[in-house]
Image 1 (cartoon, one colour):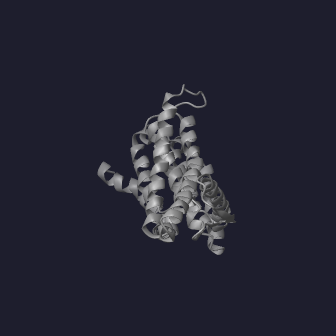
Image 2 (tube, one colour; image 1 turned 90 degrees about the vertical axis):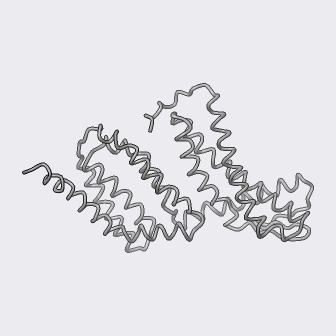
Length: 288
């Protein structure tokens, strides 16, 4: 058979595989895009999708050089993931359905190419998990403690500035107004976004995995402290400027300001880590 006629035949299985995947998960992917556009807590998904595509494309030379050893364990993972899809569909549990799509992709790579390819693609695959919204029960288990923590932190700063303040749960009573730290003000939105940026910044700023982990984990206390400062700043503005300063443009602008300040703190931490002696916790990952 001529070489030119063999190429379309070689591509045909991949086309069928992609078509089957789109048939199973196409609707879920559109729902995921809608979730990013309607839920501000997960709008960073629009950033992750092209970044994941970039990392996969940038690894094409390493994939070509990696030895292909198909593994039957991948087929087992695909079957188990499809069962998870059925369970999630029956229970209308979007988290299960969406994570099963990533698991199916992992299983396909393992079944067709083996562990070598999967190791090369480990980072973009792990990063893609951040695109999936958390289950509501998990989300609120995180958001509510963050509300209380941010409220306490903000009140502590207000007390340091000698502003009369009284806290009842997540409600802050000032002399001229009352502030309520709602779920939107809990800081979970900035935490999720900052954590994603911290992973990407750590990946590009240092080749050492131990320092990448430190940068990623540091985004959590940074986001919490920054949100507490925002709440305190809102209280100070409401006290000295007026209740209107706690809402509207100032409130939205302070959110952006605090987030950019948090990222600046993250960059400062990354620069500080470069001055530390090398740690022997892990070896550098091959350059992208």
